[in-house]
Length: 223
Ligand SMILES: *Cc1c(COP(=O)(O)O)cnc(C)c1O
Image (tube, rainbow, N blue to C red; front, side):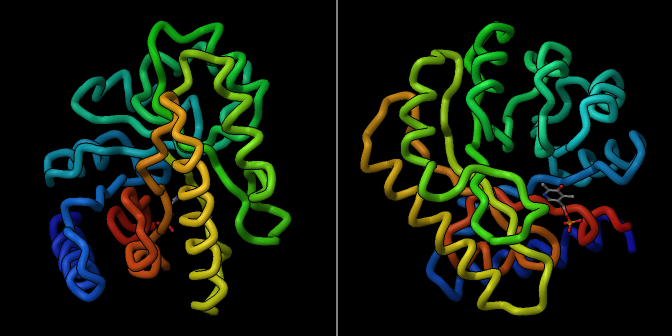
């Protein structure tokens, strides 16, 4: 399958899902996750019209950035080790994995300008999933106010990989609820207008529950 064909299908599904739940498809941004493909394929993705790219490892990101630079809007979607912060921080546009105060502190020390961050929330009980527990989200967001270079644009989560739709949906519903709680705080550094949720196997459900950024790897660029 070509990227253009895949994208056509994805856009149809986004459109149909939005229609079903009375949302505007323009509210949903596709982030192409290029972690499993090479620079040339990433370039093809940009040419197909998807300019938001997501990478989850610092080294692989830097390799693509060197070649593609500002042609893309860059999303860092994986766990970011503190010692890698200085390498990537002024090159990425969004960080989807803000998950600890020590990371906020390091970013604050190293970044030249404000960084748009999603706080990653653990909404499932899978041991392998990263993120802040739901009950800790509000204290975490308040604490982050100390670090003036962090802007909390939204929340991010990963649902478990399962065929159980209700299990998946409950994670997205939980993230939406956390978002409303953060918005109620009315903090100027945490507008929290965005929800980064939904991957290849579950993005229609995520859109139904309010996703504004969906992160698509396999369905867009293949295995
Ligand atoms: C790999 C990855 C994705 C994309 O997964 P697909 O199932 O290939 O769409 C999305 N989000 C994160 C955080 C990832 O690591």
